[in-house]
Length: 111
Image (cartoon, rainbow, N blue to C red; front, side):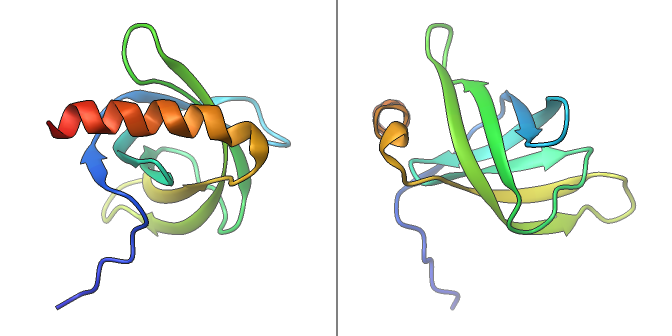
């Protein structure tokens, strides 16, 4: 059996996500799942392992979240030009409030 090493609960989450690396224009992508510590994303653009990126997405109609993150894994989707990305959210002080919003949103989805 594979051990789940996730720090917090993860939920399915299919929403538009804007991704921007330091030297690129923002790119549209689609989230796959969400936790308080990170997000799974499907992207038509390649982002290298350990890339620092900025994410912008909506939890619902009124909650827009802006987070910094780091690409911790990348997999090309077979037979396509798309990629799955695993992004870990930054743990800096400015991430505290957005992570609390994400945690509250996840709790409402789990109950």
